[in-house]
Length: 268
Image 1 (cartoon, rainbow, N blue to C red):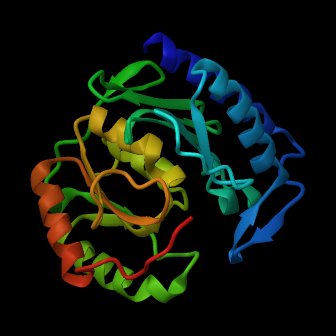
Image 2 (spheres, rainbow, N blue to C red):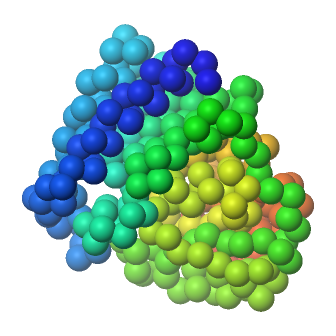
C-alpha cells in the first residue's frame, strides 16, 4: 500500500473501535422508512472519519451518509459510509463494514473497506492494484454459468422491487447461485477478491459504492453506474459489476431487458 492508503486504513481501523464497542448498538433511530436505521455509532464514526480524513488532504470535502454532509465541491472528495449494513449491525450479524472512497476530479480513485468482524482490510487505488490485508487480490476467472450473484431488492423503496426479482430470477437460472448479505460495500469487496463474480442493485447511493468502484477496477473487474456517465455524487443510481468483460456484458444485457431506463428521478 502507498503512504496515503496506509494512513486512510489506519484512521478507518481506529474508527472501527467505536463500531465494535460492547455498547455500540445503542441509540437506534429510524430514518426514511421502517427498514432504514441510524445508530449513535454511525454518527460517531462519520464524525471521527471526517475529522481525520480531511486533515490528510487539506481542502478536501466530505460526502457522508449521515448528518447531511454532502459537499462535493473539492477536487478531492471523501465519500463515507460509517457503517454499511446498519441493519446487520443492529442485529449483530457480523456483516457490516466501514467504507471510505476518495473521489479525484469526479471519479473514484482510492477505496478502503474494512470488515472489523474478520479483520479484513480491502484497499485499492486505480492503476496501482487492489489488496486484502496488504496482499494482492484480483477478480476470479469463472464464467457466467459458474458465477455467484450478489444482489438486493430496493429495500428502502420497495416500489422498485418487481424488476429486481425478474432480473435476479433470469440470472439465477443462467448462473451458479446468489447471495444477499445486506451490505453493498462488502459484497462488492468480495467480488474484487474473487469470492463472487456478479453484482446488480437497482438503487444505491454514492457512499455505498465509491470505495468499491476503485477496488474492483484495481482488481481487474468491471463496474458501471446504470444509465449514468461517470460516478454521480448527488443522486442514487443502479449498479452492475462483474469479474470479466464477457460476464459484465451478459449481466448488462439481462439487466437492461428489465431496466431500459432509470425508474426514478431523485436527488440526495
